Each structure stands twice: as structure tokens, then as C-alpha cells.
Length: 207
Image 1 (spheres, helix red, strand yellow):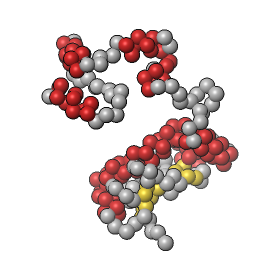
Image 2 (tube, rainbow, N blue to C red):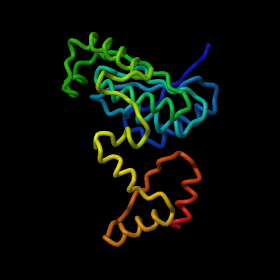
Image 3 (cartoon, rainbow, N blue to C red):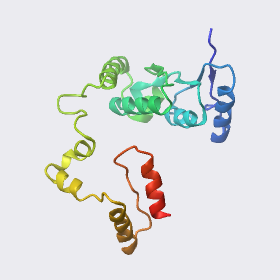
Image 4 (spheres, rainbow, N blue to C red):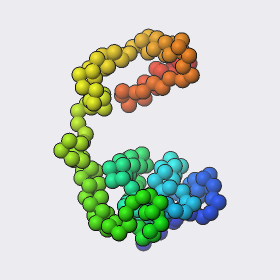
């Protein structure tokens, strides 16, 4: 039988660095998973954010909220957060979910308490549809190539925007200088490809 261990994230006064040290020690031990509780009206750490930090500090141990109060959360946002955490952790997320039983949590979130069971079932159905790659609805869902999809709301202007992007190191350098000339404190260079060589090229350019 496998044995998991909980994170001390609900213990009053616990510091974030101690939670990460706990996670590292558990990861080096025989434990199968790290678990975390979920409350809103309590001074605990938010589960998904905590598990994201723990994912970066560990290598093999599974991550499991026991349980996440789904009915306190926006369905589509939660589906994306959980999928992102699972991907960033290398597929180590086991999403334990529940309806919640403390009315004060729902009052704090301005969410009805009495119909949470029905909402829970509807949320599970929606999340499963999203995770399977289906559109959220007939007019909401993924599709298209990266830039044309992401900026599709711009209509015909998206092609003009794409064609105006700098595509050479000299053009990028000129763009950076242009922002410096107008007094910008910082400029963020966004990638359009996940090729790691892009980091080296940009580092040489700005270094």
C-alpha cells in the first residue's frame, strides 16, 4: 500500500519556505504523494498556488489536493489551472475534488451554498469536456495557429500586426532601443517559438 503525507500548509504561522523544505524532504523519502487541504475562511495557503510552488521544488512525488472545493471556483478557470499544474509538474497532479461543507466559505465567496451538489456535477462534466480538447461551447474554444488564434479578436488587423513584428536580431535590437529612447523602464520580449536557442540569441543581443 502506498502512503502519502500532507503539507503543513494549514498550520497557523507556517512560513512558505518551511512548506517547500517539507516537500523536498518528503520527495526524497518513501512517500507516494503530497496532499493539501482547501478552505477559504481560514489562514491556510491556497492549494493550487502552493502545489505549483511545490512542483518546482520536487521531482517525483505526486501532488494531490484532498480535497479541492470545486464549487467555490470558476469552472473554466479551474480546468485551465489544473491542466497547467499537471503539465508543469510532469503529469504528477491527482485532482481530489469535493463540494465543500462549510457555509462560511461560500458566504465569503458570494456563492450559493444550497445548490452546490448540482453545480458540482455540472462542473465535473464541463471540466472533462475541456480536458478532452473539446470547445467549451459552440462559440468558445481553441482553434487556429498561435498568433492568429491568440489575437483573432482583432479581426483583419491581426495580419497587419503579425507582419509588423520584428523577425531579425537587428530589428529586435532597434525595437528595444526605441523603447529605451522614450524612457521605458523595462520591455518584455515575448517568444513565438519554444526553441531554447531563442534565449541565447536574445541574451547575446541585450548582454
